[in-house]
Length: 418
Image 1: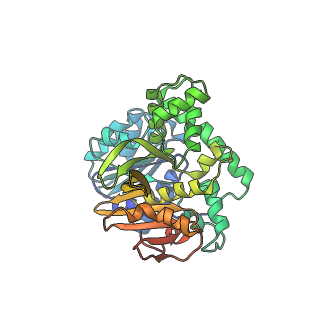
Image 2 (image 1 turned 120 degrees about the vertical axis):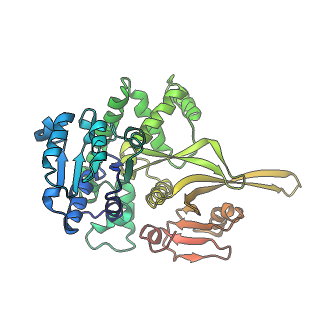
Image 3 (image 1 turned 45 degrees about the vertical axis):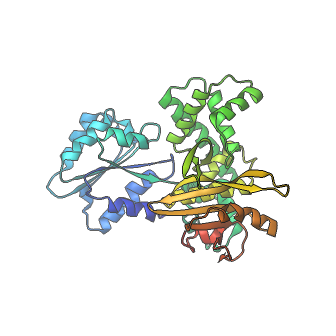
């Protein structure tokens, strides 16, 4: 079954012949190889490119082991460049080649070579793209399947299928999950993937010998999605609950490793009225909800937190940089005493000159709950769009304060522009 990834395919097609090395990064098993070797290669052929001008090399294949030598790889590719027409060089798992940076940089000077690579997150990270390719590396970040993509491979899904939404929030959007129906198989796959792939990648890249604290930290972050935290708070938790002497610097490093491997993302706090960032605390969100749930053995599946994480992921997918907002409200209580309140805005989303404030509300079941969710948005004081995404099935509408209330399906299925 073909899973269409039109958003990323369009980015690849638009990046052709831009004089840069195109590097597809993202979470392991999120479909990078399939995107490059299947979807992109097929699109090139439909566009008139001859098959013998698409050079595809899977370096993970043992049959290509000799090509992991940089000189052998160069000679092999050069031998296939038989004329002056454009060649598309697609290399999968490039990190298996020693000195691969030199190999790729060698083709920056070849006018009829357009280079595209994928790599394991343990060896080829987004920050490496900036440094290794002399400023001529172009990153295309691939995410797990969005809910819209997940729905596209289901059999005649209902547009407002709550069961399917909860299934997505439970097992996530890795491509294999979307095409696997057995719950036990899904659980085993996710749990094995976390242990045998992601944690092993981090341990190997950073030579971590004693990994008990790393695994405990992953559990702590998984348990606290949507909650404000910082390395000092986590250290205190380790000390009091785990009797661990792990240092703040080690915690910071481990969190960085998890972010570099695309397992989690950090959202910084932003003072909206003060127009400044607040150093700490932060919120952390998982790139894939299924992996998060698998890490906790599918025990902590609170819908409110999972929906907040889901909305964060969708906003990032749409190209927004996403922060956690804070609005400071100064008022006087009935006794005339001055009070200072900090109201939270779940997400401050920026893209170019555009900004959107977004609140996640699993249910708006009472007037009190509505006032609670709307309060921070009403006190922002600027004219950017303000949105509440609701988990219940009410119609999308705009209230008297100009706040757009969108049900979760209209948001995820792009029925409403945000």
